[in-house]
Length: 210
Image 1 (cartoon, rainbow, N blue to C red):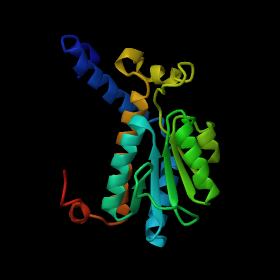
Image 2: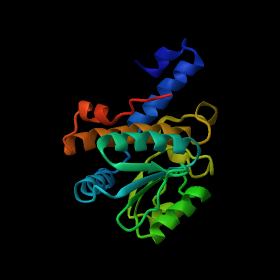
Image 3: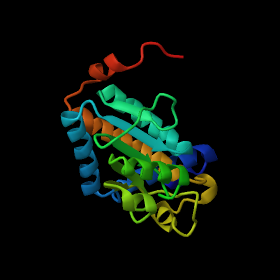
């Protein structure tokens, strides 16, 4: 289906198409070597540090994406936690922190990431800008394209990909949607590497839900 064939569709469906196209084109921009390093870090952590803790950090909608990823990590057998929950334990040098911030400058996440580094935890950063404050202190960085809500001047490449306009994807929508898909891809690769089946994940999935 081409974008021209969508002319009679409601704006909501056209926007879905634009967002999906952005995610697809982003695949060509995400650096395979960065992805490999992140997956290797997670695989090594699982194999050699099963008692270690994984703390996923994100603010706002990025935090919701992080929660979804943390849940899948839990299903895979990791001791996964989400920043802000009351049951988050202390982290240290044998632990892993994963910070999600499109701009790499979100104050809450940057402060939490700096604290994780001070405890000698390994820090993975998912951001649009490797040279951001978050990217500079991370042990592993994965650059995920997308507009951020902080600076219209930094987001030119988002428009270069599909020319999407701000009203169709306000604030950090492109980064958040792309990161969600990217992290689902990470889960798929971890399932393969750790030899986990869907039934294995189902066994750990909550059996008491609201």
